[in-house]
Every structure is written in structure tokens, then in C-alpha cells.
Length: 370
Ligand SMILES: NC(=O)c1ccc[n+]([C@@H]2O[C@H](COP(=O)([O-])OP(=O)(O)OC[C@H]3O[C@@H](n4cnc5c(N)ncnc54)[C@H](OP(=O)(O)O)[C@@H]3O)[C@@H](O)[C@H]2O)c1
Image (cartoon, rainbow, N blue to C red):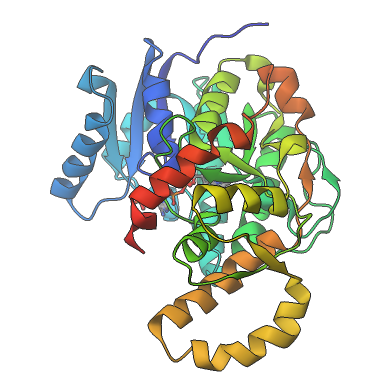
């Protein structure tokens, strides 16, 4: 099987994000690869500031191998100036689309602009480069949660099977994937990568963002909340960001991955709420986690505590976070990793091998000071 990174310049969106910052050093470790990062900036000075911040993340790499163009993936033509568009057309040979708005509470229209229009604009660019004979491949970062409210085992070959969605984010990412799959059917060389819940680095615990899993963890660590609305047997599929970045970069080296979709997930090894909760109780030195059936909580408990909670800032934060993240502890499918294991030769590391570093880092950083 061939494993060689696509040579030339990769246009990377989302370079400043949780996944993008982990992708950068791995992409630039390939001697023949240059990165052109499409970043948002309010003016030229801000753009250069962001470029220098990205270059500082890859010390020892010739700075000329990492440059930036100003853009906005949700804007027509990716928000590129005519000059930058010509530069992209002349230099870029592959694409990675990692930019997205990962908020769960966006109005549908906003989610569509951020996550669907941006995907379509990237596919339009891919088509233009392909028509010129320049495109080696395009890697699209999706999410395992395009599975929405499905239960049971979800395959990498499955996408929209009529499932419902728990928020506008899941919906918009699934719609976006629909466009990607149509482009693959047309013959564009695209691969789809679906991470589950991404946490910090498995070696250092470091994370750029304290979302999803970190939210209930923060409440629990601070002793703000004892009774956890979740089902003990719900699978919590988490993956460390270094695994996601390593896997994506490795899969990109293999032309046979074009046209396929990969669950970058723990899959069959995902822990249950009760097992993960017990480990966090030890690590955070807290009393054992007590779960409450989420349906019972929503029907009987939340209506009673809602009013007193909404009177304080902390209470309002708890209510807001609860609405956004509770569905992820109520029930989740199992994300099958057959295709990933076939092409990568391995799955994600065991959560219990690295979760201590995740908890320690989060505690040291006070959960991002939230
Ligand atoms: N984090 C997770 O748990 C998770 C799980 C599964 C899948 N994913 C997927 O992984 C990808 C990366 O997510 P992440 O965790 O790295 O998110 P993140 O940390 O929130 O970063 C988002 C990145 O996208 C950029 N971006 C957002 N809107 C943009 C726009 N309109 N134009 C240009 N750039 C824009 C942001 O730039 P700024 O710096 O300017 O804000 C940032 O670089 C996304 O596609 C997401 O759906 C994430």
C-alpha cells in the first residue's frame, strides 16, 4: 500500500483551532509539505499576528513553509481577495477543511452558513483545482455525531438514514457531509474523517478548548453538582487530539483512503458513563458520581430547580450547559471503526491510559477559567 504525503502546498482551514493546531506540526514534519492556512483576521496587522502565532507553534520549521491567507469559510468564495484566490489556484495541491463552528446552540441559519456553506465553498475550490489537474486530495473533517439520535452500531459507510439531530451543529455537519458524499460520487478525491468527542493531548493532557466532556467534569470537580443526569450504561466516546491529528495525517498519506469515511473514535473500547465517572471520582478526589435518569431529571427535577437556578449567574451557566451537553450522556450509539482499523492499522488509545493526564491538565488550568 502506498504511503506518501501529498506533495506541495496544503490549504488548511481551522489552523488556529483545537484540531488545526495539532495538525500543523504533523503536516510540517513532512519535508515536502508546505501549509497555507486560511484564517480570519480583521485587518493585515491581525493577519500577520495570527501567522506569527501559528509559526511559533512549529519552532525549527522554516517559517516560509507556513503562510496564511485572510479568509472566512462561510463567505462567498471563502472570503478570499482576488490576489489570494490566484495564489491558492497557483500553489495549492491538497485541502484539509477543519474549520467549523462547533457551538451546539446556533440558530439553524447560522449553523448552515458556518458549516454547510463553508463545506460547499471548499468543494467548489476542490473542483476548480481538480479541473486544472492540480488536486491530489481533499480531507474533510466531519463528526461522528452526524449519527444524531441513532442507537446501536453506526457504520462508517452510513450517513443520512433518516435520523433526528440533537442540535443545529449535528444537523449542519450531516448536511455538509451529504455535499461531500455527492462530490465523491462525482469523482472528486475526498476523504471524510469523523472524530467523536475530542479531548486534550494523550501525553500532556493539554487542550485548546474546554467543551463537552470538560463541562460536566468542571461542575463535578468544583462540587457544584452532585447528581449527574446520565445513564450509567451510556457510551462516552472520547479521543485525544493527538490521535485525531496523527490518524488524519497518516490516512492522508494513503491514496487508497480517497472516497472513504473514517470514524476517528474509540468505538468498541468507548467507556460507559459509570466506569468513566468512577475514574474521574478517583482522579478529582470527589465523592462517587451519582447518576439520575435523564428523562426523570428533565420531567421532574429540572422544572423545579430551573427558577432558583436562573436567579444566579452560576445557575444560568449550569442550565445553559446542561441543555447543550445533557443529550451526550443520555444515550449514544457505538461508532464502528472497521474502516479506520483497516487503513490505519490501529484504533484510538484506551481512555483509561491517558484520562489521568486529561483531568490533571484541566484541573491545573481551572477548566480554562470558566
Ligand atoms: N472538538 C470536538 O470535540 C470535535 C469533535 C468532532 C468533530 N470536530 C470537528 O473538528 C473540526 C475542528 O474542530 P475544533 O475542535 O478544532 O474547533 P475549534 O477549536 O472551535 O476551532 C475552529 C476553527 O475553525 C475556524 N473557523 C470557524 N469559523 C470560521 C470561519 N467562518 N472562517 C474561517 N475559519 C473559521 C476557527 O478560527 P478562529 O480562530 O478565527 O475562531 C478555528 O480555527 C470541526 O470541523 C469540528 O466539527 C470537533
